[in-house]
Length: 282
Image (cartoon, rainbow, N blue to C red; front, side):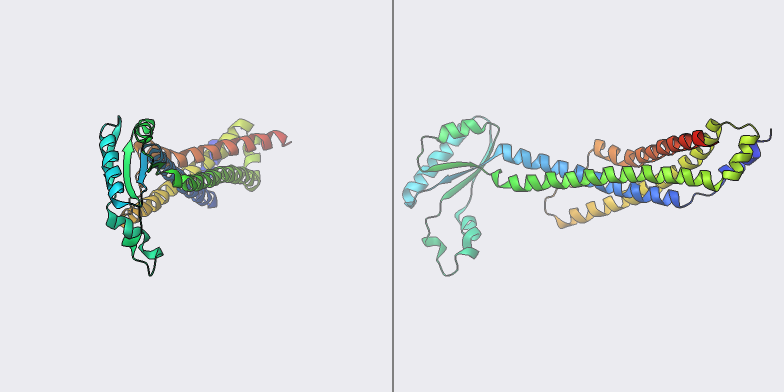
C-alpha cells in the first residue's frame, strides 16, 4: 500500500488563512494578558498605598495653637512603632493646591489646616497616639483611591473576558478549519482510506497540518504582540508619570507561553472535531 507519497503531498501544503487567524487571536490574547498583568501590579501598588499611607490634619483657626499642636504631633509620631517616614506638607504647597479654586481671595487669610503625610506599618498605633489631640484628624490617604481600584478591577475583568473570547474563537476557527480540510481533501482522504489508512491516521495527518499552521501563527502573534507591548512600555516610560509598566519574570513567562497555549487549544479542538466527523462518515 503506497500511502506515504499521498500523505507527504498533503502535508507539504503551505500555511493558509488559518495561520493568520491564529496569529491575530494570539496578539489579542497577549495584549489582554499584558493589560491584565499591568493592572494587577497597579492594584497591588494602590493596595499598598491604602494600607500604609495616612494623612494627619491639624485643624485650628489660631495659627499659634496650630503650630504648637503640629509640633506635638511630630513629637508623638517620632515615638510611633512601625513608622517609616513622616513629612509635614509646606504651607506654600497647600496654598498652591487651593489657589485655582479661590479666585479673588487671599489664600493667606484662610485658616488652612496643617497637613502631615506619613507612611507606617502600624496604623492603629498612630491613631492611638494622636487620639487625645482634639484638633487632629487622622485619615487614610488611600481612601480616595477606592474608585480607581474599582475601575481597575472592572478593566481587568474586561481583559480576562477578551482572553476567554479569543481562546473560544481560536477553538472555533480550528474546528471550522479541520472540517474544511476534510471537505477539501475528501477525495485524497477517501483514496488513503481505501488503501488502508485508519480514521486515527487520517485525523493525525490533518491535525499535523493544523498544528504546524497553529505554531506558525503563534510565532507570528508572539513577535507582533511582544513588539506592541514593548512599544507601549517605552511610551509609558517616556511620559515619566511614575506608572509601573515593568513585568516580572513570571509575567513575561505568561506572555510568552500564552500563544503556545492558544495553539495547543486550537490543535485539541481540531483533533476532537476531526475524530467526531470521521466517526460519523460512512
